[in-house]
Image 1 (cartoon, rainbow, N blue to C red):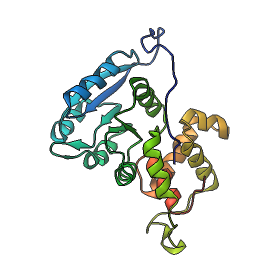
Image 2 (cartoon, rainbow, N blue to C red; image 1 turned 90 degrees about the horizontal axis):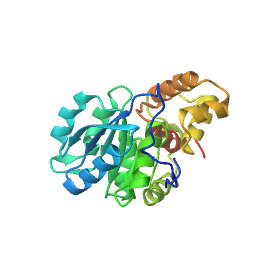
Image 3 (cartoon, rainbow, N blue to C red; image 1 turned 135 degrees about the horizontal axis):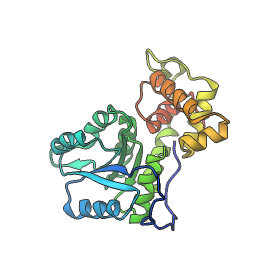
Length: 238
């Protein structure tokens, strides 16, 4: 799976973007705690590379706000009308939307469940502002940031007994190619699409095609889930 993630980035998030730069990434925040929600809003507003487009305090509000087409959803798990886990699949069914979970729940079951549901990254709420900002940008760039405390539980689950070979692969799925496994190994180490393309000496477009093939074969919707599924089935060893 991905490596534990902490940021030491000292760059100025307020630095002006050069002329012709890409438009800011659209961010949606889902958290029912006003203090935490406002804190995340401030992190986003202070970064010229990001744009806050929606804030929701419940699952029902979040589903309605998805019409604003965010590029990334910063998602809490404990919401007043249900678990944030239940909306991850809905979010990921929309084209090119990332999900970064930021929550107080760091137990093994919740971490694994979130990644299996399709979350692209998992941070705990005790992460500082710089780490949250770097996590947002890493996720948008194709990474899968995971807080060290959460990564411990994930690694423990992956070190458990491997299932018997006949039962390892889900019915209806296909085996990964050697190149697809190489790509997943890079994702497991936190590489972005661009970094993976450079390492494998292929174009980012080709990386995207491999990713689509991996998702189809493993019946998953995110890089984190793909790495987890491939490791759990015995096809990927890192």
